[in-house]
Amino acid sequence: MAELHLEQIGTKLSAALEDQECSILKTETLLQEYRIACEHFILERFHDALDALSKNLEGKLWDAHLRINRRFRKQLADLRGSKGKKRPVEQRKAAKVYTTFLKSAQRFYRGYIQKLASLPGGIREITAIARSLSLDITSSNLEANLEAESQTSPEVQHALLQSCHQTLIRLGDLSRYRESCFNTPAKKKKWEPAIGYYDLAIAVDPCSGLPYNQVAIIYRTEGNPIRTLYYLYRALSAHEPPPTAFDNLCLEFKRIQEKAWEPDGLIDAPSLTEDPLTHMQCWFPLLHSLCFSGTATQEYDRLEGKILEQLCIGLNERSLDADFVCMVVLSNIAADFAAGDRWQDDPDEERKEHAFKSFQRLNIRTFSALLQSLKTERQQAISEGNADGTACITSSLRRILPGLRYYSSWLISRATLLSLHQDDTTLDRFVKEFWIVYAEALSLLIPTIRFETVPRIEYLLEEDEAILGFRPLQQGQMEQ
Image (cartoon, rainbow, N blue to C red):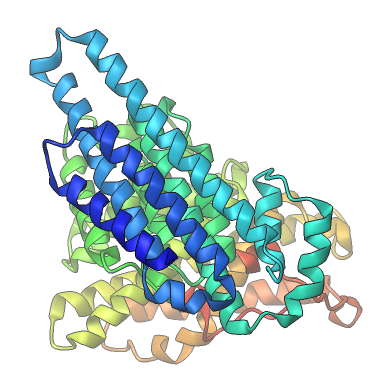
């Protein structure tokens, strides 16, 4: 009976969405009925969640939201266009109605997570998500969940977690749509709520690349190419990359190349400042776009040298924090991984081979720069009498060490390949220089720490959590 009712409402809603003459208000009313029916069907049969998933009810419901959202956005765009410039009152009314729709959708999806967390036999991860969203979960429900959790099959638990994961992404999208509808400059918009939802989705399922892709959309809107690239790389490097991940990366590289040569573009932007962070933010994405193109140019060599110089200056001046260094390192590693896959798919394509070797070279040189900074820090500590103990782990070292851990893990998976580049004299020279500085850095670091006294921890460090689901480092997994 419930299934028949659900199908009937779904049919009415589909017809309303197809009918362009049907008012948005009437369509919204049908959508609210469909929300209630879908939620009731899923939650009443949560022990048979696999059946609900097989019907793709959540996907159909979200598709209806997207179609109504597109109608609202088109209406707003028309009113804000040349034809609507003299109709500010209508613009405000339309924006208010649209915002009301988005708020209603957000309330529904937040309520859905709350109800998932309250299900008997629910799972701890969803309860933790509900708490982080400040959703009201009574203590009696929590106790019932803990008692019944063991009785819920692993398949149902996985299905409920995936439902929660998808819902968090949808909440992020709704928050992003809501912020986008206001006529404020992109850099003044408040994206934190949307990013917060996407971060929670990543925590629930690190293997999914979709939330990374959605965060990249925000940074692209903000005009922040270095973070856009990082999140596109993370989307592409996940175990389950979105189907559009590679195309999105190619489009971003094209956008970077076009912007680079404009007056005051990426090439000229840092000319008025000596701040290493500004230089890195402007030049690093351009260097990656040149590497990706697979064409050897003098501009590439010049830019690579400048970036590595600014990286060393930023580390010495302490103007680059650990998060930024890790973002640079993981972007390089992900680019190397993606370029390797492209070359494997088409080994006779010279440009793809050159792109792969360019990223290998960039990784080796960046790794060497970090090791050189570590050497400088250790030599200074030794000269000051802080050769060992906790005093030797300076704030500068704390900024470098997470990135070095990533690169050490990358080296495990790439060491054999790096020895096969004798035909490329430039890359081979950089590899030989790297092994020298690597040995020197280890020689300075090893006497610092008595490894037999270092306790073994049973939890992941922050930098370990950050790479869960990151395929390029799966072969060289970092130890606890």
